[in-house]
Length: 366
Image (cartoon, rainbow, N blue to C red; front, side, top):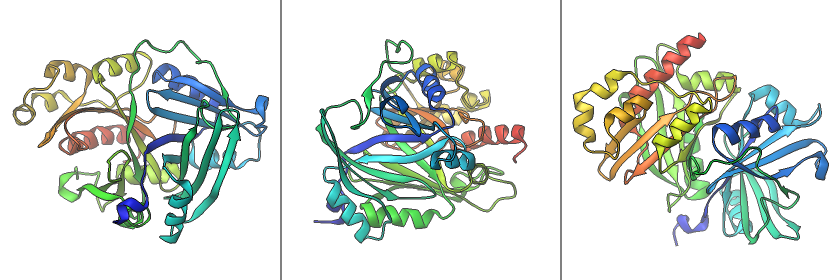
């Protein structure tokens, strides 16, 4: 038995955000991301200090926690970091074993394994620390059929959900850190994750935005965590901008898997989501056209929506990135539609970073 089997994972459980106003955030993600609210917990049902809204789209689950009163740790977190991700929760078959293994391998325990129970069954949960103030909750909900966790009540959607969901799963979650290799080693050691890809120096340096990136994932490739660090460059890189405005390491973006990126982008744009712009020259580049070959949509349709395309030996992918979705230039999202490719759009990094830098310059942070 290798290390791989010592920390088996079933997949992502939820991306948990702490926000200044959970009610309004939940409304935004309902309208702009087409998500459906399924559960709620707040002062009305036993949670006097925080309001929590749980939203789903297919297998993707977002949880929004907001402080209800002053003087809470949640309120401190929002004051220091702005709205952001506090927990990348992972489903595991055996919480006790996973937690014990993680601590034996040097992880810092934040919550010992404990059982939460209600009329819907029981959930086992524990938590370990990762970069910055981020944690990984370890969750086994195989004996539970409630809407989210014990203590939560089923809740109606906030707005009429779309007929067709915009996306159906969390594809990967990216962390911005100060010392990438240290965290890559952490995921190897603690979770038995292995490297999928690495991007260094010339692969992705534009004139300004130097960064290094490595991708770690579990054996089944259901849970994928790319990690970025800033590299030396003449200007402030996008990673440095994030670390400054977030106040340290944290989750930079969450990629959402869709099976119809064209329709998702149209509907999200109509609902007010802003996407990064890609210049026409990207689509007119004969080298790109030759490399990409046939994809499921005419390149003109992709160009109209500013969707990027990349191909590797396994197939191709279509992707697009939003601008930051809160006031601070921190967390943003990616939509990704995969056709065979297991990659992360390496061929698009230069175009993507140039787009990010145009936005950074507009903010005065380059």
